[in-house]
Amino acid sequence: MSRKRSQLAPAVLVAAVLLCAGFPQRVSADTLESALALAYQNNPLLNAQRAQVRATDEGVPQALAGYRPRVSANANISAQTNNVVTRPTPISPLVTFPDTTQSGGSTPRGFGATLTQNVFNGFQTANRTRQAESQVRAARETLRTTEQSVLLNAVIAYMNLLRDAAILDLQRSNLEVLQEQLRQTKQRLESGNVTATDVYQSESRLSVGRTQLYVAEANYRTSRAAYRQVIGVEAGKLLPATSVDRFFPNGLQGAITLGISEHPTVATAQSNVDVALYQVKVAEGALYPTLSVLGQV
Image (cartoon, rainbow, N blue to C red; front, side, top):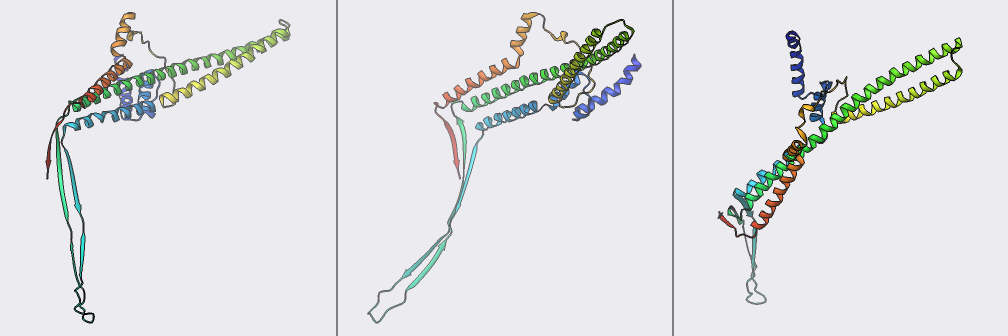
């Protein structure tokens, strides 16, 4: 037994390395556990929800920016040109003097900077920060809800494909049995042991068997496509799943208690309540006086 384990250890290690290295398409999803791992990596719904969580995380540093000073700068430049024409008064209509023109220009410019540091704004910044943190917790619990849904769909797809593959094999074997029964019935008809009615009945059962085989093949192809859609890879030779009874809580009350304390939908609702409460506090903080320090250059 120890020798077999030592031979299997390298293969298990290689599979784990491939899975962690980001090559899920090369890993054969022959077990339920590996199929769930592939679904967790490949499912686009999960990837989209993870991106949404990352976007929500950015709300925390945005809220914390209210504690930091704000700096604004401005600069201006312009050009001015002046032309002054002086026309002397003539002494007589016959004696005049030419006009005198004086030109000049300037380029006024300036720059400045303003620094504003918030000192007190009715605790709005603190409440906005706590609100952003509650939104992050709600987004993470929503991700957990999506994970549960995707993994449940992966289990359903796995077990449906396993079931339909077994039914397809059963219908194929049943069709072979019906064909053999028809052959034997025809031989017995030739020897006079049965009537033509028995042959017709065998042919009818064979036709029903073919129909059931076609239905089983259609169901198998449908389940295989659903597996590809949820897991993200083509199905290999699936192995039966192990029992999950060991994960069940002890009794109905234990299940209810565990669900209330750890179900992501409940946790999301609680975080959303916190978000709404902090939003009320932010609105109340707008009624308070504010104090800030202003510096200009």
